[in-house]
Length: 492
Image (tube, rainbow, N blue to C red; front, side, top):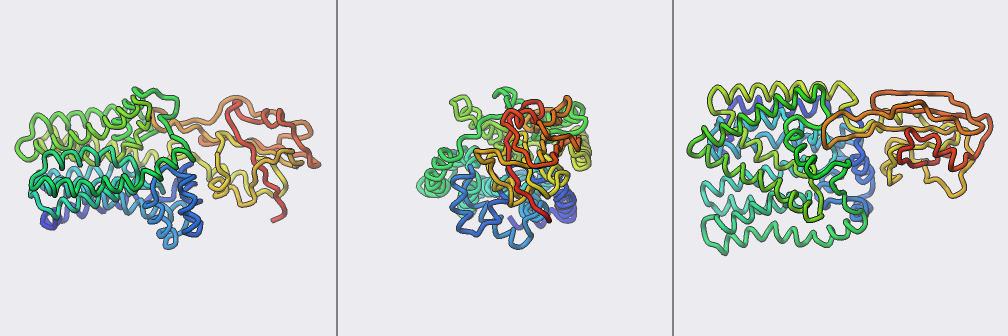
């Protein structure tokens, strides 16, 4: 792989630097997401405690958390600190995609595929999230590059590289199997060399999968399945995948941006399958087949009742997508025009999301800063509810407790409604509408705050009072599902 990497030259360096800049420039701009709060909570623990907690709090294997736990000791546990390693993984994916395109077809294909990966809003989004997705995407890209190298040269070294990278991808996230399974099937059925050797190497990721089955089953029992979600049908979520792959989740000027990006991508795919020849056509077909498999596997599982069909669960499929688009982008002036349009849309989208909070992750941090520390005993009513106080305390303090059976007397009640993040389909998320909730008996309204990402009202009483359950329900915005927590407070 060294020769194709050297041949990329200065242009590849510029593309990689662009990818690094876009990922690191806004690394700490957004609040931790719901899931990132779990990561922050886990990596603050001693190593043994973290490992014993993961089976009952997460739905993924250990590898990412081990890496992130070590990274937290180097870079800290703030938003930017915990996102350093995902950003590094995301930036490293760019030259690996170049290698896949250069080995399979040509340097030009590798360069434009790498450029797409560098500016992709969806890949940048997950490069700035302290979860396992960026590590998964990088390992899938390495696996795919080795598979292409093996298809070209039939060397045992390339096949071994594919086997190890695939096994590590599965150890990072179970959904790596959406791509590893069809790759392994090709290695066994169509790969060159001795069949027993191919089966032996294909058994490496299979063995990793088998070793993780007990953990997977335990996590399903302890945490439960995170099914399709957001109240959207399988068809709606399936249609949302290409849109999210190209421009991300909630974005400014969504209809226009989605239409332009979709048109540019459609032209690139058409050129890749119609105008490409030789190695470029073969690579486009192989990457296209893997893309189809990466979506078909979770779709079939969803139809069978195991519904994991979401854009984020299939995000690693963007690796072969980048290769298909790369082949199309180099096919004459029309391909170049499509590349320019898609890059412009990507950059405009990146800037729009970075500069407008309502297109970002749920604003736990902003609401916590507005609420401030508990200087007196108070109840905080949150919507939507949060299931675990450990992650909740990342922003809302160690003194936060579950509501006891007997509602305590407090001098303050705060109601916070975070904007509902639609996330896996179209449209920005919005805060609840309507008037502010009424004050419970004995309390008076002292503060109303409404932003694009949350609403907050604060009630205070002259003397500590214990509100009834009905009164607490009455301070919930729009009567949405909520949770009540207790902060004993004190002077600070």
